[in-house]
Length: 147
Length: 181
Image (cartoon, rainbow over all chains, first blue to last red):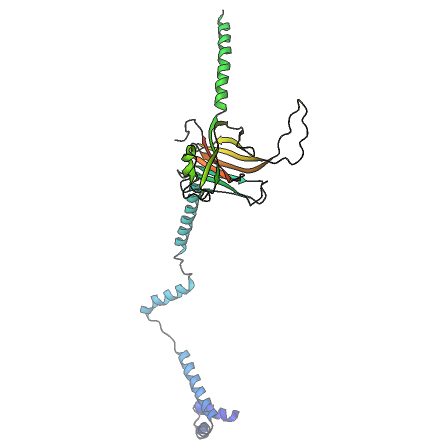
């Protein structure tokens, strides 16, 4: 088998003495024909590798730019935008906090509750402002809890 | 009379007066207007008020569960800052008002408490002549600390009465000129 393949290979490389036998082999068996096709493909590939690409002077700047592009990290165009957005968000939070701490209560609110409590077991104390600004503290006592 | 004697006499006259004035300035008070109301549901189409408390209609208009408001007590008093002032509401409840301070926005920081007298189930020990009666057992049924805007009404309520619930409409006023106009 190897001998027959070598016969084909020698013929492929130009040895005319093996031509008749090689042609018979290729015509006779599909695997020999496939081997010949593989040799052709290999030769084509090797030729394409052997061809040297020539860079013309006019192409040189683009060629160098391509190299630089690969070597240098891509500039981060969005870094500034995010930094600005973070600064604006932080300023906004600080401004809201200062406003909430320093701003006087709305004009129509009659009182602000700081703490509430009860000692009645099961009761809850809540508070709310009515629409007209009246602060209301209300103890909600479960039915039958008071003597 | 020598010059030093006149000076001494003047000093003796001025010091007590100055003392009185500083004492007055050191203990400012809060005017307290209290309307204690019994709120019930009687099935009226429109909320009914005793004629002399009709002005609290806006203050209690959110209490939709009630349609009948009857005055239990109306009190106008003063409460000094730093001290607790007691107001008896009925035989069960007592209101205690403790103005703490006037804050930077001229609001009155105040503790408002309601105490309930607990029924004395045990047999009363006989009190000897000259001996003080034992103090009743009290339970603090409501306590809140709030910053009240001078002259504006707020209300406290929800405590049970024999019929209905107790609603206290309170207005605290600090008569001193505003520090923050």
